[in-house]
Image (cartoon, rainbow, N blue to C red; front, side, top):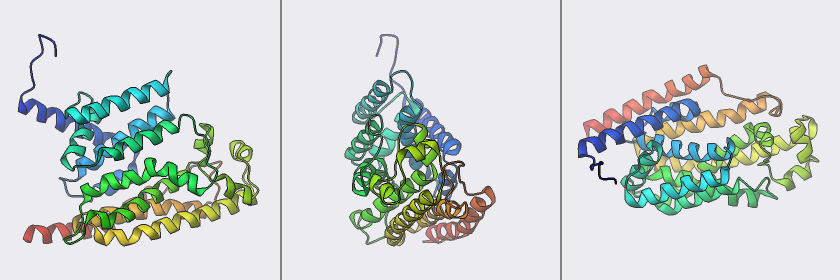
Length: 307
């Protein structure tokens, strides 16, 4: 602090914190439309924290996927700043400030953040994965810990320990990420990375060069069919966790699951042609899923207020 600076008042700190959460919500709305739509089903007190966690993940991911002149240095600087600010309890950066506040408010273990940042760092040098076990090890930091970060924000039902719901939160984080991998095969290949297990690719006679050249054929179709089946099993592993959550958080998770699971359905409808197009869930379908879950979410909130 320089001689001309003065400590912020409590009101000023709260004003900056509120602005930081609004900034994160805007990031979520711009880049994660399905995810943002689902978060609208959360109670108002939970929503900002989810926006903060999304914005932090998005910011780190962008430092890797849309790098500047020194991506390794930029990510390292951002990571060091966030970890230091988490210990200090404050940041002048809006995304990091909201993340710091969320981590401290919900007592999220800092190890989850460290593992996530390590996974993002590995994306700078690792361009492929030998098998599903290797991909799972990467996803621990890039997806599993995201589920574990969000779990304290969502809360668990009375009598359910967080540890009991954790395996299902992990499975859902992995299912969401695997869904993104299947949708974004071509986009990731343009960045020099392939998130499909090499042994599964080889079993179907699909090469990395074919993916990079974006050549769709029967072999690639069969590969994608197998991968879709693998991802659906992750969603099945996650499903028992939803009833373990706080009642007012369940409709959000059900909506997010339907929206992301819908991407798999759209991939199937497109005959697994993800190399020459980006498969999406249509806006009317997204809004339909939201509307169906909204009534349930409102009913739970009403019952909660009455109690």
